[in-house]
Image 1: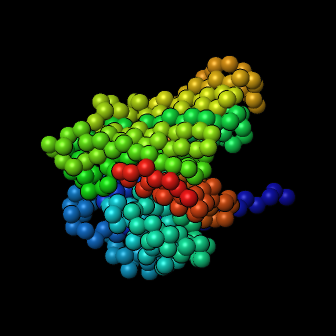
Image 2: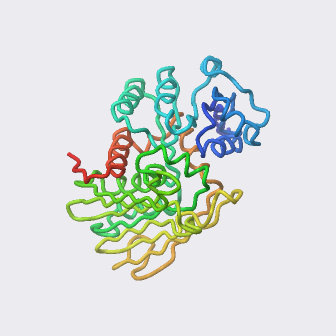
Image 3: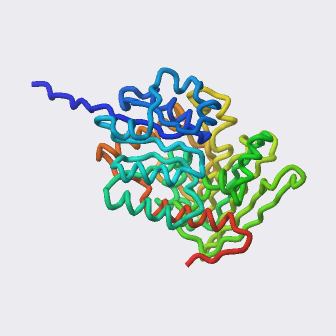
Length: 351
């Protein structure tokens, strides 16, 4: 007798907010995964965002709902929280209180108490919280994290990261509302990875520069130095760099090896349709580890079908209790603590 194949039900998912810059591509991603997700509708109460983005093709033919209508949809399990950045935590909290798993975009606000309360709510209700840090599902980055956890690079003593680009005047004006500017919006992705590798730093020192004070109040060229007992990590994030996407990088140095991912994604992914370019990390080892030989080599990793495909597929597996969330609520809280320290004018010691 042939074994019966288990047919997985599709996960009903909705989206609240279209104001986040990653929101439309998240919707495009779940719509490209019809075997996993059933999209029930979109919520956007702000007429500004409906006018600016409501006609994007990613939302074509989808029902526009009120939040109450979305929450009352029979069988709804997951909500994509893609509100404009200042509204993310409050929106996510309402979703959790209503009993839904969430994918919440980043960053997670300046009010750590409100964020902690949100995460505690998820913990009490046993609900999934997945933060939209896109590099977590990047195959090259995942391989680097594996190397660190396996100890193949030895004792990590240095991490060097860059996340830069150029910005339009309108985008600069929008970013000017955030303390820490480019560090808050873009450097957060890198801090997430450093914390995943090294944990909580002892001290964070920042340099927040304004290259065009005659235009706006945006801190657009930022550097943070994270100090550990036996390591340092740097995070650079500027929004005035020509073709900055090509210099986005993650370099991890240990006393037994170095891994370089330059650029992290290949090029300006906002101008590309899936699949994304293949990224080729460069690896140097003092001695052979696993399938990798001693010395210098380029490492082959699979191409990504899309920036968020693997991440949102992983979300479905977590919701179905097939896997545990690889990023704990404690990790999410620590990332935000370190990020806010990196957006302060004064050095901070983290207890």
